[in-house]
Image (cartoon, rainbow, N blue to C red; front, side, top):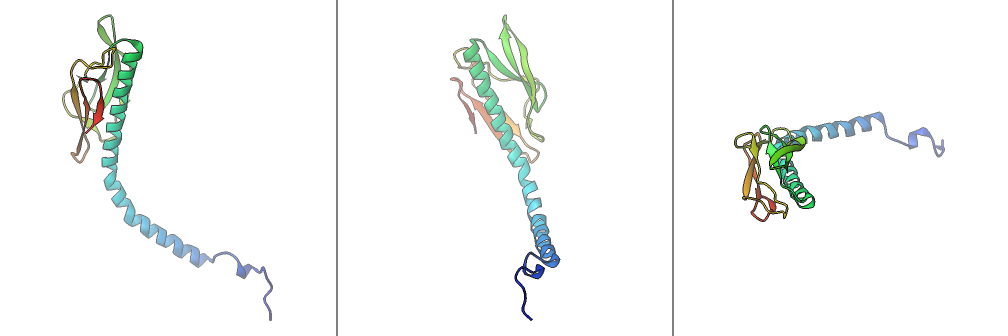
Length: 151
């Protein structure tokens, strides 16, 4: 007998084939997932440093555009807020903002960063050290001319 074109046996995958592919995918994920989880604290540390550097640059831009002093104040070991000078004293403008889970700022809290002046410079350069749960560190540096860098 001759097979007709287009019969169900000519198209698609069998259940056995699909189950074999699914089993291989589960095994590969089981091997890869623990390795990816060990990298997570390092990624969070980098993300926290980028977040902090970006917010310091934002404080500098606000100081320049609004012709007033700005700074960041750490209220806990992993959260901070923007402060703006008004009438000679600093007050909270926005926040609090949190760093990623497991990331802390070393040092005492409350801790304030250098003050960004209306020209974009700072009153004194400073270094902020971030630490993750594996005790890896990254530092965010603000130099005297207001440049923010991650080291």
